[in-house]
Image (tube, rainbow, N blue to C red; front, side, top):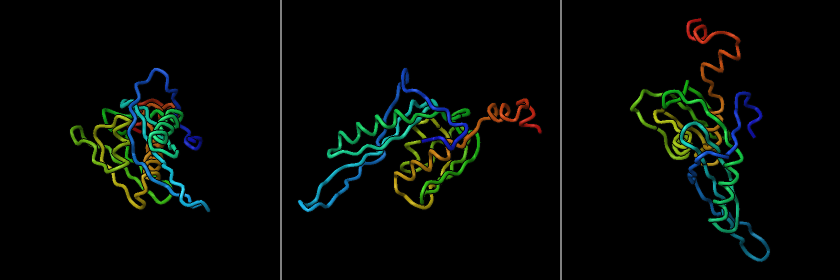
Length: 174
């Protein structure tokens, strides 16, 4: 799922205290010759609130099973996100489908200035101070994936220095 991100570090769920947060539950309808068949799809974000987060989708005929399936799916898609002093290392834009998300680092004490699905993802990953703007589609599925797109593109100074083969000081001072 995260193959296109070269710095995405996949994490195993063992030994982590993960908290799951429900982003949304949709009732979906399939019209058959016998009438309407109702089902539910749930999107869930799990995170340890330090720097590991994952998202999952579950579908079932009843809500509880859909949520349980979504949590299981989310645990299979855990990634580590670089966090620097309670905020993100740099500004980043993410997109998925029609959803666009812009996340910006903020000074300590700012809080999570984000709405809906973006807030849930940022709180689950453990970011305490961040500004964000969601544009385009407000579909929670796409907003969550756009937020993940932005988070997975984040790089901390150590990984940049290692990638370029230079010292940390040279990254900042040129």
